[in-house]
Amino acid sequence: MAALGDARRNQVTAARGDSPRADPTRRADIARETDAAFRADVLAGLTARPRAIPARWFYDRRGSELFEDITRLPEYYLTRAERSILSAHAADIGKLTGPGRVVVEFGSGSSAKTPLVLSAVAPSAYVPIDISGDFLRDSVDALSQQFPTLPMHPIEGNFMHRLVLPPTIGTGPRMGFFPGSTIGNMNAPAAVSLLRAMWETLGEGSKLLIGIDRIKSPDVLLPAYDDAQGVTAEFNLNLLHRINRELRGTIPTSAFRHVARWNDTEARIEMHLEATRDLSFSVDGHPFAISKGKTIHTENSYKYGPRDARLLLRSAGWTPVAEWTDREELFGLILAEARAVPAAP
Ligand code: AVI
Image 1 (spheres, rainbow, N blue to C red):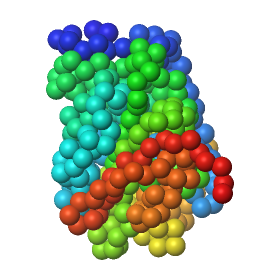
Image 2 (cartoon, helix red, strand yellow):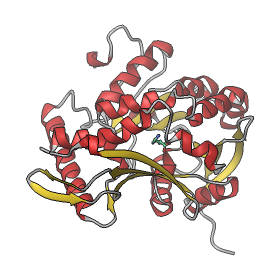
Image 3 (cartoon, rainbow, N blue to C red):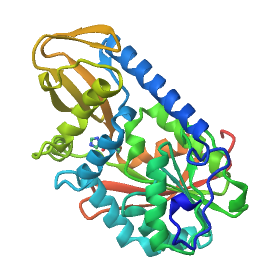
């Protein structure tokens, strides 16, 4: 695929039927399905009480750029902590996984973390899976420069469900990589169902390297989700701009403010958009009203104690075999193994 960069020596293949660049009809179908799902979630979310729109709609191009900016903020410790763990424990990770695994990354590796993992485990192939073809292409392009001989097989798809990996990767052992505590953006049932889907995609005997953010003082958590420069606020408000852009919305975006809350009972950070006055607007011709002080709930970011995180993994058939943390114990990186689920004693 010339589109993925022509100065490359990698063997790069896209999963059959999953390359929208190779198939414009399929690309148009995916875009139509995404538009319809966005519209349905927004209309349902603004009608529901409490109002809530799923966090996955943050990530249009602008939202993804803003998220990249967030990862560089001084208050957003997650990315730095996880990267420091990967750097400090690369040798251990490599020893425990062994060389020659196929590394399957859930979400495309546009960050600096993927090269650390690929260097640590010396894989036989790399399979990034992402819903966004653009991000897949960008990340594979960037990684190809660094790992010119590593075969790469990007898959454009939704990893929330079991996926069939391309036969070209062979039958060798696999290792999933799911960094960034993205698992924290799901409630426990959704997280378990995703981890089970990963088990099924990767198969028995596979490993999973997963980053999970830890519970800590709200004094550290809250600034990470409400930074001094206002980047997280812009990220949150971009959802309203996206609704206006893509769904013929008339939302007065300047009449909403970003709010981050620590919900101790649920052990999660919540992000909301709060109306600063009584408002009415329309989305795709549908009228809505919201009173001053009411919010639209836009994201949950669950935090886990070390035991909670291990229990979560076990509930989905993953046996934790090692765990590392950073110097301040802010973040956990767990290596788990897909063992056959034993019968209850
Ligand atoms: C992607 N995810 C793990 C981020 C988080 O920390 O929950 C999303 C985010 N939301 C606000 N800041 C970052």
